[in-house]
Image 1 (spheres, one colour):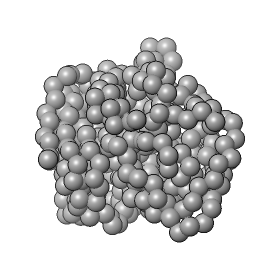
Image 2 (tube, one colour):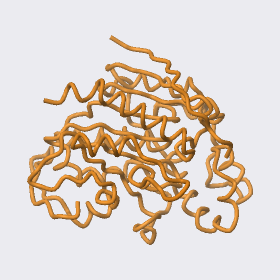
Image 3 (cartoon, one colour):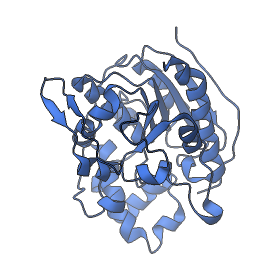
Length: 315
């Protein structure tokens, strides 16, 4: 992957825990539901490591729900790295200073969930596993969602499902380098991976800016994981309509992403009746969060919007 450079240039368009928590929540259909602690820790294993955990009965001022890209794990958001790869995460620093809790979703097939079945997964199935675990966390605490790449579709679908539980929409969506889910099949720039040979699949991964190191000795680990992860967008059957949401949306596009175009990212504006802003990351390819400086720039911009647009709404 070629290095990405950081920039402050912005294009904007505006239209008009380790401890048990025992509270119960009422799902949309009226049944009482208690959170499954084991499931919570399985889905959000990085909460304690992130340093943002708020211990009950204390409550956070804000929760930030995060989804990573295909082939990646929850620690894209919860881990600042080691040695020369370490960054001081502007998002984690914001959370610690403002009593905000960061919940980054760990999908099966990686990390502590690496031995769980993960074969041709579907987005709707995945979010319906996550949603009941988050009911208690989001019913009475304001939240925002952050998604990168296919994480954008996971985030949008989760918010839609959460409404069935009586949970309000987030105060803000932060979505990067992926088209709106209403994109027509004929306009999707990727090839479905199911029928690709191993060589063809590697070529497809390179089009997504996957780093060359992945195709070395560690390919035997990443190959099945990425095959499965790619099924999330290959098999996705969109059931979201335009103007589904009322939340404000900030979308990001890296100028060196030659798979997902700026126009595709701009289509997120059609998904909401709220305000829309497009942020341009100059030099960023599709996987810019894997590049140190670009990641810092991206997270700083997210924090800037939270401070300016989200925090004033929180009483």
